[in-house]
Amino acid sequence: MDQKVSQLIDSYREAYTEMLQRWVRIPSVKDAAEEGAPFGREVRRMLDTAMADAKALGFDVRDFDGYACDVTLGEADEKIAVLGHLDVVPVGDGWTKPPFEALIENGRIYGRGTNDDKGPALAALFAMKAVREAGIPLKKSIRLILGCDEESDWKDMEYYGAHERIPDVGFSPDASFPLINTEKGMLVLELNAPAARTGLKVLEFATGDRINVIPGECKALAEGGPETAEKVRAYAEKTGLPYTAEVTDRGVLLTATGIPGHSAYPEGKRNAIGMMLLLLKELGAEGPVAVLAEAVGTESDGTALGCACRDEVSEGLTCNMGILRLQEDGTWKGTLDMRCPVTADQEALKQAAAAHLPGFDVTVAIQKPPHHVPAESELVSSLLAAYEEETGLEGKPMSTGGGTYAKVLKQGVAFGALFPDEEDLAHQADEYEEIDRLMLAAKIYANALIRLAGE
Ligand SMILES: [Zn+2]
Image (cartoon, rainbow, N blue to C red):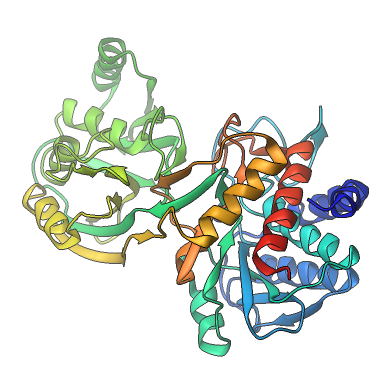
């Protein structure tokens, strides 16, 4: 790549780090809508901060009524899009570092959003700054679109698309390098059932904030006393899993400790809701709890649910129960988040799940088709060439169960910013990024943008 661009990016290190720290210190978790702030006050504050910073870096910036903003470089009608997001998932359990202080230790910056997606989105912004300041002539313009609802409902992109034409071609710096050109389809089912009249009585159960998070801890209050607590200890010993029981004056308070993560990447994780269901069934729960324990439990590939399937470009289906609640009206409500291979028939999957969940009303809450950009396309080959040139590593396209903004674009792929040898801590405790890696990502993005938009 142009030497000057590379040197410019090195020179931005301090400014980049300071800006990212300020961004990470804003807990931009979705909250109740307010006027001009459709995703809550903190998300609005994050958007205002990002817009002010982009303006201060010398870019044209536009606000889309609190749903998103865009930052444009160049005048040409034809545009290359870069799609990132400013919202973050809730903190969750298990942090040993402060989640919103942007602490820097040993070259790492810790905090929610350092990797997903504030760090990479900001790397793309500084890449644009370097392209501009190096005076690289552009035949296409570059448009960075920063959304505010990626972790929830993608209402930001819906709103943006209703008010501005979304470019056809581009990438989203919101996943992994080298590049993801295949995204599985998404099928989220909502499950509703009346509570059982027989068996162990469950008094309280409310776990999970988001469908796309594997819960790391699940608590439930069930009827019983010291005898029940003893059964829990025996079950913990038999299974080797971390369960605890505490006798209270209202019943036995049960805790299951899982391994939290992102629903699309269940490998090595353990769903605490699933653990709790298995325990409650062991203790004598019947009806919906027993049905879910058998058909879902801690399984993440949908086998017992009759949904397991796979294909060559996208690998196997994944399934996660992110939310399960015993509601005040005495009914159970839960969610299953399935990431489906490109060739899977989603209607058939829904029917298979319903058939394995007797007593439940099963409805489709979210459905998104799969997304695929051919490996031979100009987009994929240009981005991989940029990656190879900057890292010296081999660039090969991959598939994922994660949905990224890439599929908002007709021809879009996910491109970075997690490197192949890095631990993926998106949506997990102690999320961090190495500042060196973020600077390298900025160079890869600048290289890629010059290939895609340069003369
Ligand atoms: Zn993200």
